[in-house]
Image (cartoon, rainbow, N blue to C red; front, top):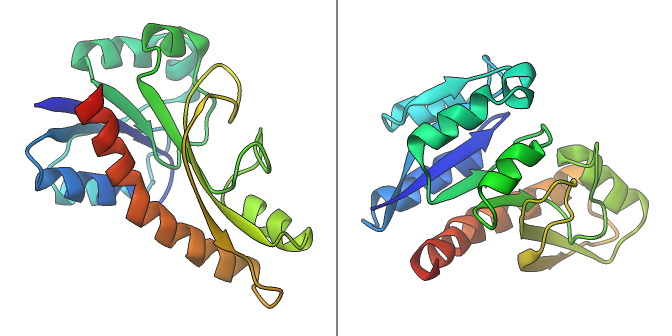
Length: 188
């Protein structure tokens, strides 16, 4: 059985969706959820499914302590699901093409440092974009610049608020992220 390690910083809806998806497949399982926020809701979501969690500091990430913990697990895939810190090059080079991220826009548009969540949706609406979507990509040493694995777009109506756009993006994430992960796991 393949091992998936999830990193998340927030509410954890994508992490929970991935955990739930793989509970029923027999192909892989989420073996742990790592977070940089002790109060992140993802912890409760993971514990509900008896998935161990690990809280770490930015310093732990930068000094190699997190890499040691990853190495102890030896995951087949590392999934960033709403994880907001930049992944250190030491982890990226240790796990080439084994780390993926989901971004709430059609990269290369609206990517980079500070472009996440409502920041992205506000920018999409402010710029009157006719469409937006999700991008699942490999992680490299730069924010949102790794090779694109999958994109799915959705129409943005003139009347759409950033909150409406966020709901459309959330639906795309829920529908496609676990499926793309499964394809990577089974073909990898």
